[in-house]
Amino acid sequence: MTRSPKTPVFALACGILGYGISAAQFTAMDPVHVAPHIYQNVLENERVRVLKVTERNGETPPVHSHPASLIVHLSPCAWLETSAGGGSRMQSFRLGDAVWREQTTHGGETSQVVQECSRLEIELK
Image (cartoon, rainbow, N blue to C red; front, side, top):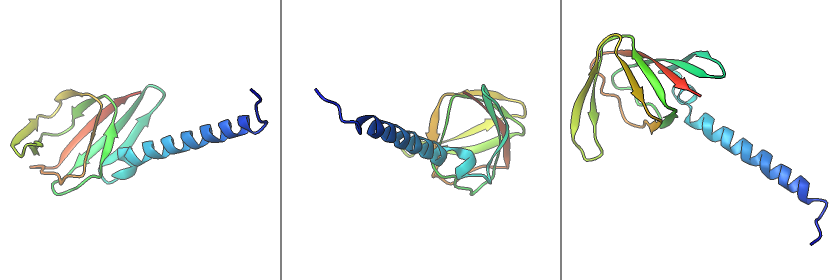
């Protein structure tokens, strides 16, 4: 089988295009980029990224993704959470409560926060 001299160039171009598309998708799903009024990057290095989150009633963040994260509440937080089946339940946390969250994609729903909620989200890389 003979190889065209253009094959390596084509493969390189496809690789660069694929990288560009995946980087654009990450940015499109990054909470700091899609909802900067809610998510603020306060620290980032090769191991973690720390986001300060301030969520207010009536805000609707676009769909976005989070890697596995440790969440530490900086204020008492309470909100009404609606399930896919239409049921609802109250979620609440006290100042200093720490919660583990697995990787998730969410958003696109109006926040039902009882009071302004402030927290740190520590994302593992």
